[in-house]
Image 1 (cartoon, one colour):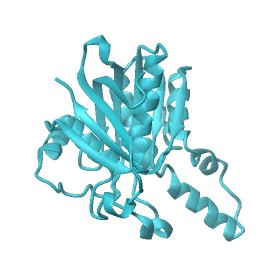
Image 2 (cartoon, rainbow, N blue to C red; image 1 turned 180 degrees about the vertical axis):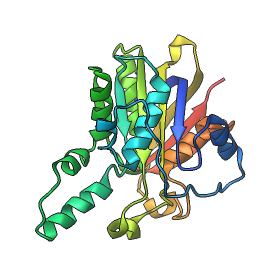
Image 3 (tube, rainbow, N blue to C red; image 1 turned 120 degrees about the vertical axis):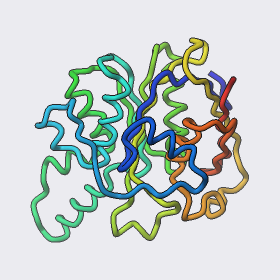
Image 4 (cartoon, rainbow, N blue to C red; image 1 turned 135 degrees about the vertical axis):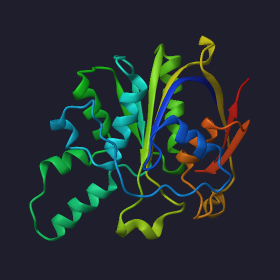
Length: 255
């Protein structure tokens, strides 16, 4: 695998957000003039393919992620999974910390579902799937880090890898620290090595920057980087540039 770039194919994908539930709705959203209308904060999918006992444990972020994972994989099993989320279940974490401050007992279910790999673990348990899983957060470059991890698995011999991304708006104590317009969304990509000659082909390359310049990377009104990458994937632009974490990331659509 190259040390300054990776190539991969997306052979199947699925996405869910409030008001964007079908592929036609997502295509219309991706083709809309910038900036697209913000995704509303409320609503969550039914995740009907998961048993109710497990489904009830998931919050909005988890249900969005699970809905897209089921839609993308179908009956396929033994597919390694890479889950990424910049903020994860921070809302549950805030609830747990608030309970501690007030001297209230913690909910074991809430505690278990607050960890970063909770959604991926639920997916594995529900399907009795023993494939490897990895959950990560890399700040503004979380989606790029996830793609690199997925391509590493492909280079190591995996035939396919499921990349799962999800995020939600930050809860009240952290709203003031948002550096973009956080919006609820989730998507799943089924990745395959570019050499397989199937699916839509992409390249992700990067180079270092002398300074972070985070304040100049993304205006506070911009959509999250993960959502912007999903828009690029669905659209027709040849490239998408993203600067964050002292890196300049370049997404390219290959012929």
